[in-house]
Length: 115
Length: 116
Image: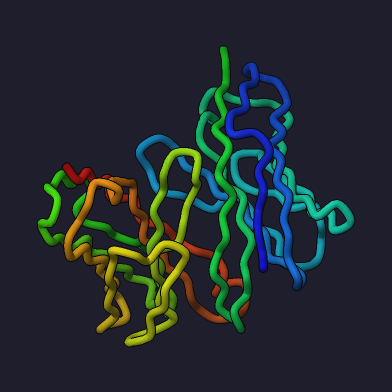
């Protein structure tokens, strides 16, 4: 069965510093992997996804993530944090039930950005 | 505009008083799902539906009911709410052509429920 582990429930960085949010997954099939972002009082929106092909994927707002099969990881990075990046971030894997997948989410990492 | 709409956004109720949270999507998606979000637990799936009249339990279905009589709507029903159902609830949908499209979920803005 698929599962997702996000290391660190809270991460705090200074504005302009590197953002690194860690995600490890477990999957018995080649996974589809996702990062979603939740801003305060809002729903989740897709940040980026990995399905097949290039292992470094770029998303919105300057974020990117690299799929590393050997490490079963899909860490999210951004070179320079902005105050507007403060939000909760969720990593997810699709369990691909036939062609329609359910998403299994990690427990989330809350990112704080200090001025 | 493509969207998933949940109503109400905020709800305070008392133990045992039946309530329904509505969810509607305008993207003609086959798949819809309900999640609850609790601090430190992330999102946990309550029920999902692969298409009209096809529903199945997720990880935490106890105390909830759903129905899918039409493609666009997927209401969440709490027949007898209890305080442990106080939570933030999200509806999501996905669909379209191709495996990738079927696996990208779109979320509503959430319903914050308090059961006293």
